[in-house]
Image 1: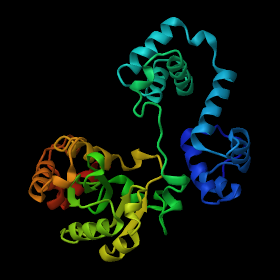
Image 2 (image 1 turned 90 degrees about the vertical axis):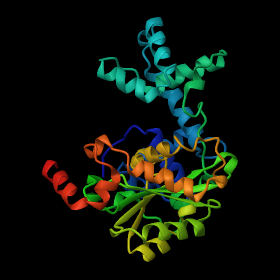
Image 3 (image 1 turned 135 degrees about the horizontal axis):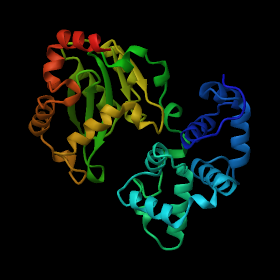
Image 4 (image 1 turned 45 degrees about the vertical axis):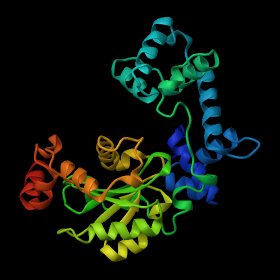
Length: 327
């Protein structure tokens, strides 16, 4: 376990919030997050309000305290503010701006940029409209997201290391795509090695329907399913039944860590090329969904050396040998 006090990021706060809501002790949180218990204790003590420890409130308090204590006035010169505004208007996130500037030798924290955006909003500005969520972060009900509401949830940290290397067929990522006004749902599954995609329309985001659709799509494949890494939605609550039916292992990404299922997120974006967010997915025919699946699986991909996902998935031994020789 790491020693001493560590700076707490929003990602860590989101996990503390979820663990606390699930009744975890501070000692257990510290062990899971790899920090000293004093880090957890200090975070909860300093950033709790009248209604206890809440994610957005805690993050706002920390940002305000940090910017007041450490932001150097000379950094936010009119020229620097103009440069930051230029990037924000290109829809860069504060983290992306901060990271890019750091490579150029300019050290501005993303917290400082957020503070600047909120100040601009209070004065009637519209920079906040360029943020992905316009500054709004949505929580699942009552802070019981993720491990708190999915029985038997196994965290991605326990997933075999070989999955991360993307060298074998059969390690999948799973998610759902929701239609406009919650009309219709599509189950989206993608193989991490070959990028081979499976899509299945279901009536609604329901764990039983997701279970049946997953087994139907995956049991017909020529390769065994080794693992599936799911999003933390309640529709995957029957992961245990999926694991038994497919003789596979199921894992869940860390809450708020979409990049741990980056391929799935990217694939869903490709599906949206054909089915925009304004689409009522309950009206999408099986024939159209099969056509989209076919188009995606037969599209050359740069990451596959311009082979198609279908070619790699169905002719995997030779391709895996090439991958291993470059690993």
